[in-house]
Image (tube, rainbow, N blue to C red):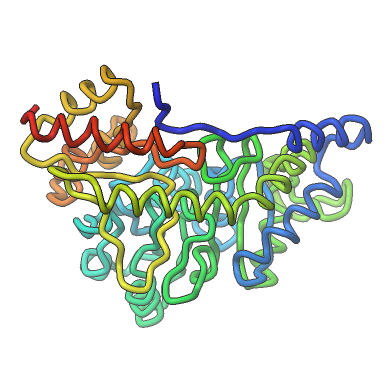
Length: 358
């Protein structure tokens, strides 16, 4: 079986963990500080605040920016539930809007149409590794005096017109979950250019303290450990090479897949292919994926149920582009561990199934 995703953990990561274990400093410490400093280089030298997950990062960033009960935050529904969960955890209300059917990212026109007097922020998602239409979104935000928090969980080293993901809005958040383009085992990173937002994020992750036992605000415990940061530092050094390999694998698929719709890349965008997501049109998508699995090629559907229709939110309204995507998308292996033989097998299997009319 060619796996749909494959975390790449080697001797260097194990050595880094052992170094921390031997040091006796396991909680948030010098490794976290070094990871934050090193990660800053890929997000335009913004402040970086490491936390224990991408979801925590979104939650802490929204809290740091002052989101509260009665506020509305515009989000896409075609995403992982954490995008909306983080909004709801602040007491604010996620307002779900439709996507651009080509990029799968939030539609700026839908964003503008959803603005009300209660709207406080926009939370675009850079889905599958391609940045959202940030020029249009930032223009809307400026005109309506709205905050922007980028959900960059899947977009390490993605960019648009030379600006990296995580460097557009008031804050950005990355995830280091095991299947992301780089991992720390588990973890997240908040990015911001604003000194006060950075300080508030640091307070919130650490029980409201900057100095021990001097709690300034009511906070959380969402710190990253030095163990996780040590893994993340090693992975960060490999990220550029892995990203080049993902993009090369995607190029091979672009040039050789037939009978399916390959990913659209917007002008000026550097897509980092956290997922290589095809559209299966004119076939039963689930049967198509099952046949791929039967023939030894892993795959996955991200995401089969729009977030607004999950029981946790339970809205019945229709977002047509979101519904179509949820019914048609299929993500195939694109990770840097794929061999040339793997790539050829994936293409052969997909083209054969598409030609057979499954």
